[in-house]
Length: 63
Image 1 (cartoon, rainbow, N blue to C red):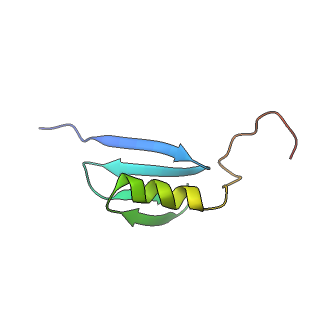
Image 2 (spheres, helix red, strand yellow):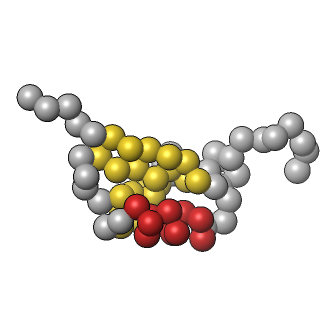
Image 3 (cartoon, rainbow, N blue to C red):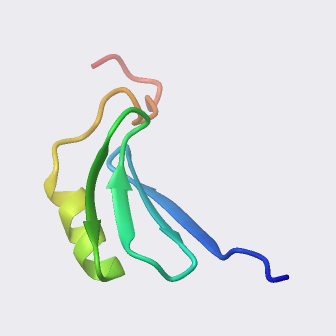
């Protein structure tokens, strides 16, 4: 029995996830926004989206 491989990172308030070398997925807590064949494509997509204010942590300043 093998252990699943899981990679996850957060960019602009969006999560970029990969499980068992499958497609890279860009999502929020509520929605899956897209699946991509490479990590670079998924990161480029996440960076091109507007910041997700519900997930971006405040830096102590009022916005």
